[in-house]
Length: 390
Image (cartoon, rainbow, N blue to C red):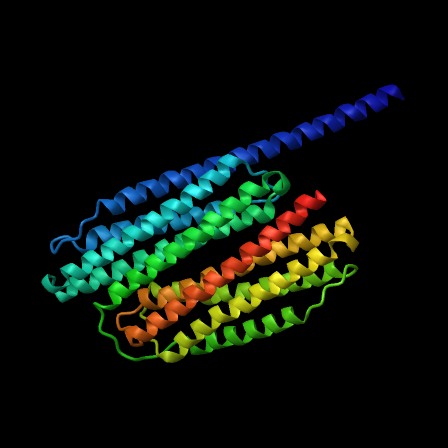
């Protein structure tokens, strides 16, 4: 009997040691992946800083830089896609995320500088060369913006999958704040970059993507209405939020499918736009603020019901909350990318420059509001996790 018990204890200790080794290996692998991304971003930053456009070498360096930027986006996406729960995050990994965000801001500022240089050159460059330079510049701008989105999405996934939020709460919040501050600055740089390029483009009015974007607006508004109608109950909260999280993820899939279609089209065709798709893009970003407001309402309700809710229900509910916050953040990124793609895909941009800029500005304001709401929801959720030791 004693031998049997001893054998069982040894087996249990062996299993626990194995789990510990796996967790440590996963943590080290994540740290290495993030550090490799930092090195790749540093190299791209050096490459952009070395570009000085001239009439004799206008398009080539920009195309090469965009290829490197697209490779960087793919690398971030691969690391993000390979993340698997549960994760144990450490200060080093969070520091790498901070560094990636700072480097991304530097890339956005370099993109802004290059767009200004392009404007200075425009009177002395052949129109066909200028056209190629404009296309390359818009693609570079789009990929740097996509890079910011993927970094933010990766940070959110790490938060959702983390098993040690309570231990790292303050450092996680600091990282999320840095991400939010930098993404706003990056958006401002991208907007000014696009403004600079639009001043070099003659525009005509045409049309596309109306049905797809219009349906997304309708579906998003219906989702926001359903979310706002939910009244949380301490006994059914887990099921209620699981259902809402599923609805949010289903809508996210629709947004991602629409954005993927635009990306696919961008490789072989031009985009022709009039006011309708641009207004729909603006309406989509406005809809995001409604989703984020409902999310904030859920967290406040959970906070008020904390004392009368079981730990099991509360833990599952907060996991659903964090998943929703990550999904809404991804939605915001994809909607911004669709707006950027309308520029990167067009030979003739289907709207006046002023209307395009109004749409871009509206998107930036709404996405900033959405991100602020998501950050507030994550802070409160993390505070509850720490207080209840979930």
